[in-house]
Length: 118
Image 1 (cartoon, one colour):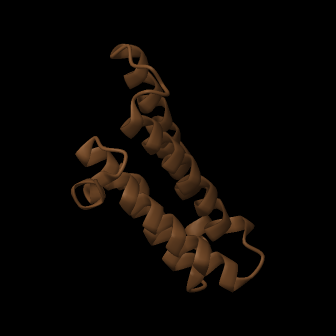
Image 2: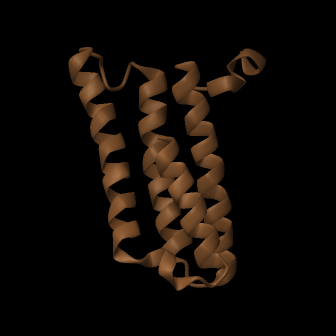
Image 3: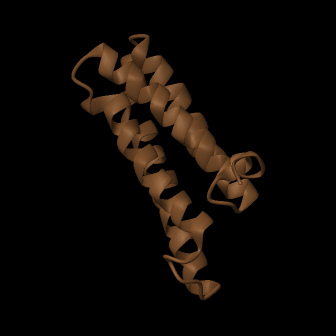
């Protein structure tokens, strides 16, 4: 999981600073592979542990956040039409990643915010 966030952080910052080599094919394919592996691992966890996809709150939250993180990452790196949209998408993707990490570590849908919000 940290590999995905670190790669997005590095590629996004390089790209936003004008370094076009951050979109080189090997880096893109590595990013696709890591994110696909994360999604596959979440689905495999559901199957192996015989969990209900909709009643295991932290895993459902993590999958939704992972999908949002990937979508924001595509706007940050490629689909954003203006530098402002790309920067906002980049910051939002990193924020979503950070929260998703806390959800995964705490096994709580509210992540590390759970003690303060419950």
